[in-house]
Image (tube, rainbow, N blue to C red):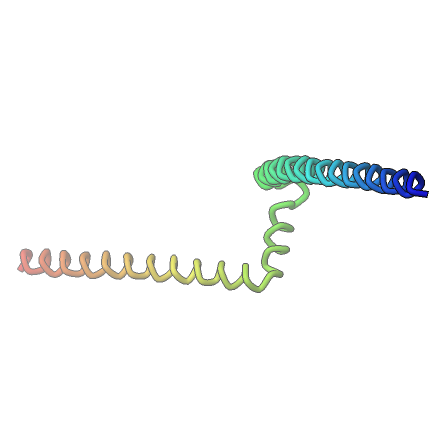
Length: 115
């Protein structure tokens, strides 16, 4: 009877070791596949971005217009572009006003010199 229990215990330990080894192997394989997929995904995304940039330069089939229209459908993008345009418009208005003030002073000086 003790031989049967000894054999059963040995069998249980042996199968447990095999299951643990298989589990460790599957975990390592899963991590490796995850890393490979992540690397290939980054490469694919980089490739797609380069392709989009090339198509934007060509503007074949109004790709650029379609891209901008799709971007404007996103409220965050619309808000960001509106903010940037307002900043640029304010900057240009300020520069133009400064040039106009400077030109007006030059004209006043010129008119004073003519008199």
